[in-house]
Image 1 (spheres, rainbow, N blue to C red):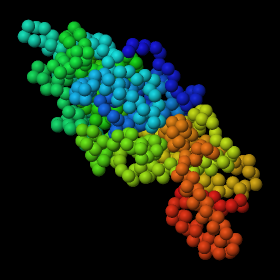
Image 2 (image 1 turned 30 degrees about the vertical axis):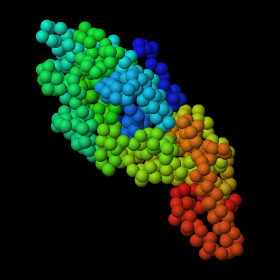
Image 3 (image 1 turned 45 degrees about the vertical axis):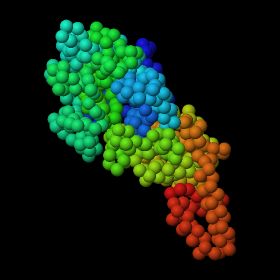
Image 4 (image 1 turned 60 degrees about the vertical axis):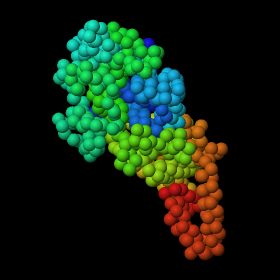
Amino acid sequence: MTNTQEPQNTNTSGALAVAKAAAGLKLYDTASHAVSSFTPIKPGQVGIYVCGATVQSSPHIGHIRAAVAFDVVRRWFERLGYKVTFVRNVTDIDDKILDKAAAAGQQWWERAYIYEREFTEAYSKLGVEPPTYEPRATGHMIDMIDLIKKIIDNGHAYVVRDTDGNPTGNVYFDVASWPHYGELTHQKQTAVSDAASEVTDTMGPSVDNAGNDKYNPVDPADMSPDKHDPRDFALWKAPKDSDPLDARWNTPFGTGRPGWHIECSAMSHRYLKDMFDIHGGGLDLRFPHHENEMAQTRAAGYDSAARWMHSAWVTAKGEKMSKSLGNGLSVPAVLAEHSAWVVRYALGSVQYRSMLEWSDQTLAEAQSAYDRVANFIERAGAAVGEQPSREEIMAISADALPADFVAAMNDDINVSGASAAIFTAIRSGNTLLSKLADRADSDVAKAEVREALVNVRAMLDTLGLDPLAEPWVSDGAAGGAAGAGANSAEHDALDKLVSEQLAERAEARKAKDFARADAIRDALGAAGIAIEDGPQGSTWSLK
């Protein structure tokens, strides 16, 4: 891949300029180990590179959590009015892909392409925006070879040669020559800023916590006796005897294929040039991948990312969700039992640096959140006679959103606080709806309801959760929120049951059997259903 066109403007917020709220944005940086104010390198623009999937097998929930986390980060930048260039790579060649393809009787590139498509489908189903660029490692061999040449020429890498002086294909980064090695993850030299950092430092790999890392097995090439220092890592690797001939590339330092880390240095530089704003990825990539990536990029003479951000793991009973540990949940299996909206909400329900415990309760809470959201949006739309268009929702600037939501998002993307702000707005909106029929100034009252509806949907959209956006509408995940013809079966069934109870209650009140009427109301209340009585009758909503 040699696409060198200027990055496209992927700002979908509709804002004409960067919002005033952008001045308050603060983000965590793994390298400084602190939350600090964000200032873009180029005014009005943000460049983000996020490590994507190694496409060896099907995606599981742990993989997708990082994609959702950085999708929310990106969406907030867009809502703030920034022009965002978002790069997410695909690692389509490595030892696991080669070994698993051989075991399955597949071509290695065939296996990579099959699972790349599965990841793309999972991203799409869960509402993750497509990246500006999605480069594959195999499309950037020339970039990698040129980068390795620069590192060698700068005296920070060495070529392993055989007894005849010929290059073997193995090239190692010379860690001892680079005094800055460890600056990203040397946790003992930095202060812990908060509880989330303390947890991730304990669980996440770093220079001080490498040891026997079950989440990041050592690359066999990095165990070679030819290394000058145990810390040295492979930039280029001689092929194994079992490697297919089409998985080898000829270079000045021998035939072979790239080490794991060099690809991201090459691709981030290709698409974002020198220093860019944010490099993201999962916590397990912090060391050795990102530590090594930072070192080799800078040793080649380029600036690395200005800020490094890492999303924490999805855990199951406190253990990282991982195929290698046998506790992975595939995305198709989860989506077979839960709507994609509910799964996305669950994956984004806590701040990106916090561990997310995956359980039936997590999904039940997400389903409850959906019911409350969809119920309000449907009722508010019916009350004002329309649903605001997607264009209107996307055009809402961060400056026009509720202050508590903005404050939460500006606080290192605190989605828990942002969700609380959304449900505060929904409660206020429900109160407006309950009083609508009693208002003499009905036009003003409807305008207030419409404003609440727009705010709720715009906040949800910032989290990728507006039920009336794609992919939720096409996939039927919007439930009753979309209006006639799009009601979910669950909502229809619940509405029928509650309506029958409300009709019975109305008859009891008409007969002055207030004990019976109160008993019905209390029973519905105990089930989580709020009843509002008005001149036109009673309406219901989920608490």
